[in-house]
Length: 186
Image (tube, rainbow, N blue to C red; front, side):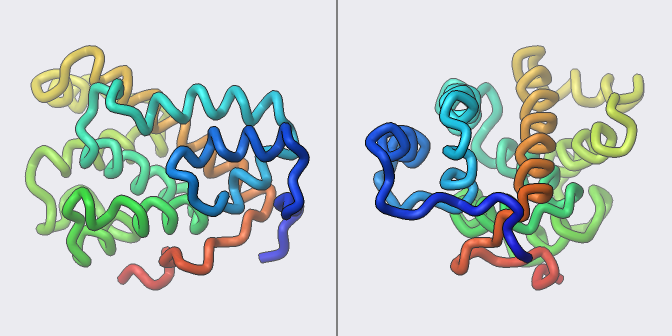
């Protein structure tokens, strides 16, 4: 993949360096996606606030639920970049097995590697991806498992990672060297 929007490289201006530090709170090397987003500093600042919520402890979903939503959404969008980053950084932390990683990438909620709760999360993401809504039956099952706050987080988190996937795919952000690829998850 050839980047359509080249990520910035060092040396960074002070404003870019400050925004990258905010986007990478652990102080690590800024990832390509963030180095691409800082080409529009006001947008990157907005992304920092919204994206920070989704990676914070304020999110009403568990870390595993969050990652199931993100990983499935980015896989369904064919976003090698974001899927690989999240699998590499969070996959093991949330207990994803190799079978589950393969299913997130290429399988279905009905795959035998999922318990009923995880399958419900994947089914919800798939419904949103395929139809931009959730039917009454699925909504009833979700409402039996999740609070209204959690449902809102699930809906917006799915949409947020559609937007991130669209931007990464269309801008041609190259996968990180250390991240797995969707094609390898079988």
